Length: 213
Ligand SMILES: NC(=O)c1ccc[n+]([C@@H]2O[C@H](COP(=O)([O-])OP(=O)(O)OC[C@H]3O[C@@H](n4cnc5c(N)ncnc54)[C@H](OP(=O)(O)O)[C@@H]3O)[C@@H](O)[C@H]2O)c1
Image (tube, rainbow, N blue to C red; front, top):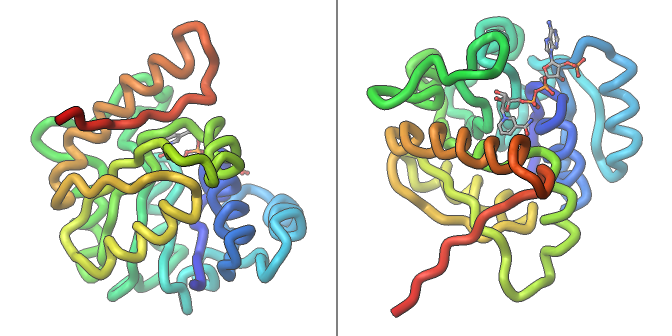
């Protein structure tokens, strides 16, 4: 698949590198330095390259949106028309100092994003785990029991694209339903963040749901 990364920071750089290692054609975009994007592309190897947000989105089969909530308008303006695109968002609607969700309960960042780009096919995925665990999960992908990763969205085919990438990253995808369920996953991430960053043990933390019948 061709994957455009909009936001090449902690999440975008790692997920883009993992997708490139899985054989996808990745374009890294949206960082404060062009050099950083070039470096990321070289390090990721394969067909990875650096580009502008518009170039990253243009021919992409999927776009990963991985920017701060306050950067949404800017990156979306730079990306151009996303109609028809699968847009996978791991972004959370955080306030400026990253201490609180500014949208919750009656809406979610993912739903607000979908309202801003009504022609796009938005899926919320990857936002429920800390960036620090991504390489570890990918490295452990051949283990029998993979960590879970919840995702949601309103369109089956767009969700199938996300499922492929979730599996490539080493997770077990859990479809929780339509995009409005991001109202629950985004606050859930605050719990994960608490465990990752404020409780002993470190941020290399993923989760796994199991059923006992
Ligand atoms: N980090 C996590 O563990 C985690 C986990 C779950 C969800 N999330 C969510 O995922 C999203 C991305 O998080 P992140 O931690 O990856 O953020 P980040 O490291 O700050 O990355 C954001 C990217 O946006 C770029 N950027 C910021 N301002 C810019 C500007 N003015 N012009 C051009 N580029 C600019 C940054 O450039 P530089 O590379 O130059 O800094 C960086 O590449 C957020 O919504 C966050 O809430 C994060």
